[in-house]
Length: 115
Figure 1 (cartoon, helix red, strand yellow):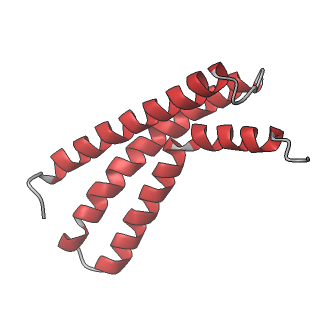
Figure 2: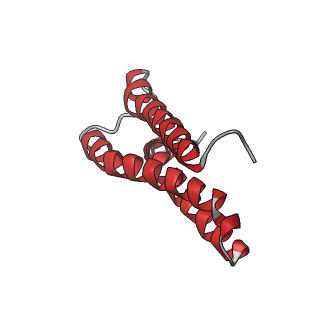
């Protein structure tokens, strides 16, 4: 499959997911408000505090699900195990991308398209 053991695969995916989450945090909560793309006001603190457990939990879930999918061939019911692992990965990715989701909702809810 690849040159990584299952433990190295999980560690590599965790580090990658945490790096992605930190970039999304910086873009969503530092860059976008600084350039004036969004103006959330007091909601920014609430969103930031919510994004911490979602991001960390999502990164952990993503790394666990990647190992789960990688080891699915060793167990019976490969299709069901693979589906559960992939579903967990998508939920983890949603947790990582939560800051970007709330920033996009803020941007599009305040966008004035009337001409």
